[in-house]
Image (tube, rainbow, N blue to C red):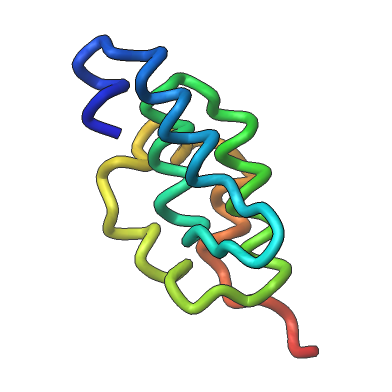
Length: 88
């Protein structure tokens, strides 16, 4: 994330490629979404968060207090993520 924010976008993209889940590797969705936002990829960040919501990721309630998601706050899709998921 810091790489993207300091203008080292190519380096940040390589970090993102390493962080994306592949095979048995797990990458926390909140962390991926933050990196995508820092790269200006809001749509992809929302997709990652929506997938985490569908999988009932435990960290999603933290989105409400995390200022790094400020650029998404006006989005109806983001607002939906702040609500508890429907019962399974």
